[in-house]
Length: 347
Image 1: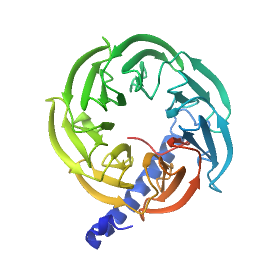
Image 2: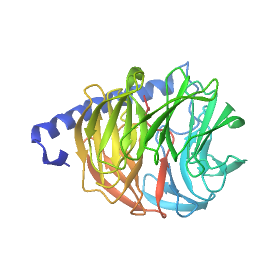
Image 3: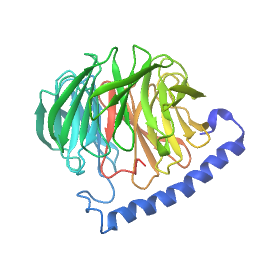
């Protein structure tokens, strides 16, 4: 898949980089499994089950990864959009925005193991890096709920009203600040987690969505879904640094795991771009995709990228070295989150 038919030299360079980087990433994954300082994973080395959230069907599709076929569809609750593992890496949290709860799932077997009720309008969710805080964005109700967290035991600390349409979350490495995109206000907000108060807000381009912090907490990358680029924000000085044109509907991020590159989905363009976070340049595109690429996940060997196609009722598997779509899997309506365990590092 050549990057927008840019010079072939560019594509060859990207492919060579991917192979080298993936080799190093595989070593890191194996080292983490065998390290005496890290608890042994509860899952096999290679993931067997992919979980796809069908936001429009109130269900989850469970995919057998070796055969790439849906083996079961499980009802979980209204509007499951996003998901996250508990800090102990044992339980998958599925946030039902319209169901006002969070469902607990065994990420290896796909078995539902419980439910956390009265989590109001949990659209996007996230643990702070120190695992002390759990943040739930109320996209529909214009609120951000901050919980004191002990794994899946959550105690509401404060509800912060933020207009309009809180969307995605990013944190500083020291867990002091949570950043929230406000889609329909075209703003970025910063919340002090210790005091649960808004530190500041600043304007962005149209319909900001996905957020990613570059290494060293230097810049915030903002997917501008209402336009065609990723906005680079110097958050310490509250100013725009650059706009990286990726494609219409730039939406969500998934880092490659090498501390250098990050993927971004372009929902309207139906492409996925690869950004160099050091040079703040786009270095490649994956094209020829079904409509509406959205959330992404990478297998622990670093070789394949799984993605949901929000407008196509499909999930897909992309070969990272060649940047080519290999497989398309029919799932439910409006597929959003995707997950499997284990997975490639996010750092």
